[in-house]
Length: 475
Image (cartoon, rainbow, N blue to C red; front, side, top):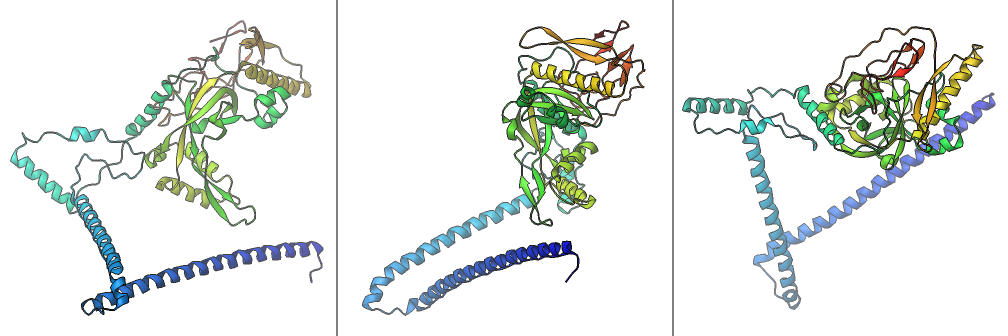
């Protein structure tokens, strides 16, 4: 008996867990035994039928004519004839399938054909149409050469076609952007580039919104966060975009820490209705507007291989976020499942259906108040502020948004190299939400936004906001 009373409680819990595991094992064993018993009964019945049919076949040429048999023979013969007809039909279908499989195996592979693709979302190769040319004017020598090349391919000596180039995958992103560009714009988009929400480094967005008024919290009851690494914006209609999200997620059984399961995810969820969204661009927050989501397509294994490391890592992290005690081995296994196509990534379209100017103004004012209280807590007088007008939706009047000033100079801005998607519909110029780099600091005494990410974003201007020599802001 252990002396430590806490150890007694731990032992009791361990015993209870072992009992639960034992009960689960016993139930699984009983279920397996029941299935085996049902299978045995079914096999026994089929064996009896086979024995009866064989016996009737043997006695076919020596029938016994009795009053009872004369009544039973027509019914049994009808059953036998029906079974024979069904067997003959099945044999015919099997022969047709074998012939079709043989024809597919012997069909030569053209040099212009793409590699085999078994995905439902595979796109037709535009080079196939160009490969179907008329061979009437081809010389006999070239025809013989083509026959030799086809025979080499049948013998396994032909070269495997190369995987598609990134430019071909870029066409898929352009097709998505064309769909987004056809969606109409919201009725009240903002005229100026969005101003970032300046939060203290120790405060999260959830904590920031928890300190808001009851009215603002009600408007943002089901807000959604869009991450820059998994969100792309349409270059023609910057208000719309699409995001990548896992179609399956791994979670741990709360009762058994070693039991993990995969569940399908509703990628649309509450965004089937207009939802207020915030955009996180490498730590800088923005109010993006009201969005509705719609299903576009799934990411293929080829597109997954071309995604940036940051994007794939974020998707893998989101996939196993519900798994306890995850290790680097689990991360590697999940990446291999995505590469093999066992796990899917859904591409969800983002349609901007409105921009709540009241929410935008309230969030900006709340951030300004927090920053002013931070200056006061440090014992530093609140610096003068420069205001930029934001249209009040209800009153139609400009409401000032404060931007603190200082005398520090900004550091040198840096840029990042574009990825596949940034080169095919995600501009990396400009100083909107999705500019490659913001001037983090102050110019002529005016505080400019913090650095942002590489992807372009809704409502971003061509050149963002700049500071004049007199301290005012212009585009």
